[in-house]
Length: 459
Image 1 (cartoon, one colour):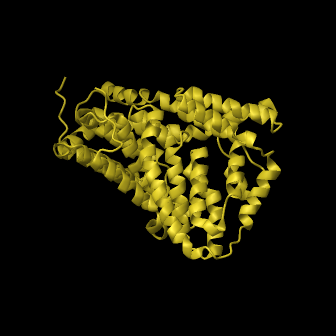
Image 2: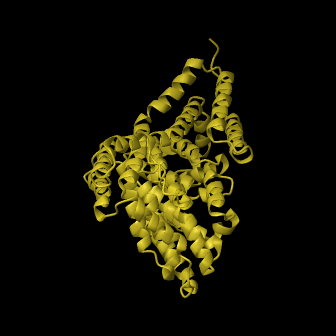
């Protein structure tokens, strides 16, 4: 047996840069899904492991351990798909949209669409769906009011991203909690400390910016069309909010995540059968295949066709590949070598939290995908948080905000590409008005500097 070679800082940095280049080239230039570039990177790290004379079995075990540690998050994400499917089938998601649009006010356009996008993303766990549906409708209203398209888009994205990250149904939120080895409820509780000042700050800014357009008349025909379509397709009533109430009560009682989601989905199935008049077979099928809308209104069908176990398959596969790559990087000591080189300057709370925020942001920018940034940063910085006694919920909050909240700023990330294409606005136009990036960063740095809301481990 030959002696295993040691990974140097230069080697580690070189392999990491090659990995980032492959991801960037695959996602941005070749327009591939992130799955394929990540798979290629696993092969690259495997080759590096062979160069280091690491036994093949050890590399496989490194991947296996990384994936096995996250089995719980796979089940949670699958249950998120089930909840969304049943909640749409029973009318819970439609009634939230309907009541929200009833409260919509053209006179308070920017602040009202920010709040509605926040609520919609929180209920569905998807900022992309929110922006691609009611967000598109609000873009038309904004144009009729004479509001710059970049300002309207920035407001929509800010609300949607903030609601997504605070939602217990968000895939990225569940992934961050699992990778950081923190309970989902603890992660959500920690996120609130940044979410509240961030969304309040955004609301103040958008309210001030919206004053100059308060007297303009708006074309709300598209919004009215969505509301009429919802009223025709579903029996709408406040009773349909029951599944959300059940979810929030169980969260408050700190019931484990999976049983909570199961109870919320079964409540949706019951309402689907008893109130909407769907058959038990159709209602249970929505758990697997999701809900397929056929109202004849394209925008509304896009909004409501979602959920189910199969809808989460691609996300889970991406997470498995990202974790497998992280396991290889861990076994080959690539991330350890890079982090250990800079750990000398990370002696204080502020520097560690700031470095984690910056690292997750930069990795998200250069890998073009938030999942990789979450996995790599959490694994790389977790030990430093432990050494300083800072609770991992702070790590989860910091990494999540950096990897997802700032992703729309860059036009080549998956978030930037999606929002730009869906809303029909170039990233350069909405970036100056994407106020969540400003308020969230300010809140993160303020809390890191003052120690407020920073929780420490009991150990």
